[in-house]
Image (cartoon, rainbow, N blue to C red; front, side):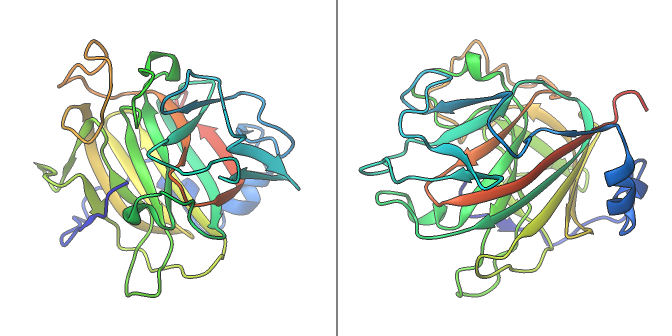
Length: 269
């Protein structure tokens, strides 16, 4: 979503229950653990539902989301112009406490008609509303976004930022005033694969990691604020804590690949 404000102060007091699972040695245990769920199975989009602005949930009018060679691709060759047809691909099960691993890379050129801020810009939505409750022309689900950005060769552009369509969060004990807050991650230029990890503990704490390093954390996600359009007012109940919800991958006009979307359910721990 929109370009973020850089976070200048990141308190060090919250490193936490559950982050031991995110240590550099976690890859080996991840492969052994039966609790890990591959949300993307590497073959097809079983369990996923698209919702694109202007279309009903379940209708992917231009084959935006597809699987080729074991990779979940977001493409726009079926669009004449993008024209704010923002889309999201929702996994069928809501979650509350979990660790999410997403490996992604930006590829190719932005779709004609895409907004300038959306170049090499995508993300994964957390605690998102049910796609069936989104209005026909709604642009983004009410959710908390882990924003993925690729370098543009124009200076620093960190990834795994946080954006808040229809939501609010608390950073360093204060409600964040900006819609997007930058992480402390490095910039990733070109079409390289990047590993994003997110630890989500209901509405208590959310932590972003990039390639194993903690880059951002915040608390208290609630429904509120703006930067979401066309929603049903009966769904946007401001002040409601966001303790659980759906996970969704974005289509924001720049092609992107996802090769891993994997989750460890922490709700029983």
